[in-house]
Amino acid sequence: MKRWLASAGLVFVALLVLLAPLPGFAQNCALCYTQASSTGARMIQALRSGILVLIIPPTLGSIGMIFIVRQKSTRYRKEQTGENTQDW
Image 1 (cartoon, one colour):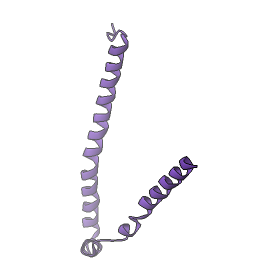
Image 2 (image 1 turned 180 degrees about the vertical axis):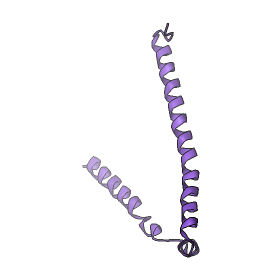
Image 3 (image 1 turned 120 degrees about the vertical axis):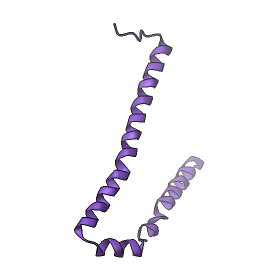
């Protein structure tokens, strides 16, 4: 009974955490919205390009780090199990 009550409480807290920030998504910067809507198509394209420039390098860096860490951990596991790491 205590286990069920604890899991129900955990689910309730998780739902509360997920539903709490919903009003925050509705807030926008009025100045940013009016400036972006009053500009021409060229400025809107520049904003989109700027967003891509800010998103792509960190994403590629994260993927590269994940790849390197995975290779290192695989090599470490092979060394710990005694497998031959030389591919002659």
